[in-house]
Length: 302
Image (tube, rainbow, N blue to C red; front, side, top):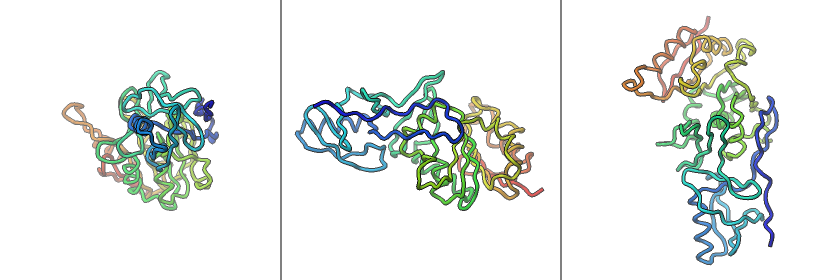
């Protein structure tokens, strides 16, 4: 019987602000899941239960000698899969959820279900002790998002935005300048789809550089801000005094800001980055203090 295939994953080619980029609807495979499918086949089982959406749900797959089927679509058994890799169906085979466009950007499985991503092998989200999705929830709770209009400066996989939606934020404007990261979002079932009916248009995702665009945002436009920039060596402009001054300008008086800094080792890095961030935020008019693995700040009333 010929195999029926799902459409190829959507390719993000620099969508304009507000452009619809459909989410991938096919199965996501990791090596343990592929091994479970093969074990079920070898044991002569008729079905195999597993998660084909990285832990969002458990669903059965029909097991046949030459292929397996999920949601009534048939797929070949994959060749040996690599660890720490997520595979998607591209219409002809299972391929890694990764791209190389100057940097290798890759969706990476975790023990928690929700994936992280890497850029040139550098992990972008914490996963050692907590799910990156749960980590986002804890940080978002610091800005008390319910009913607020929120600026999400560096959207990444969208976990901050998802936590804001879940907590009842009125609106989220999320910036992400890397087109390949936006493509990963279309593959990640944990990433919120701005066009999903259940979000009622509350999430606006912009393919743009917030460091460039922030100057065109009106004063006091937001009730709270989430700032999760790449590390300082990659995006120093997002730690600059001029940028913090702009964050203060677009945030209403009394508004909260959470700024992820990580916890760089002062002995090896030679600097206390959280303390530097606090000093600059205070010069911009914030009251700031350490919180979790970053800084929580409140814009003063001028």
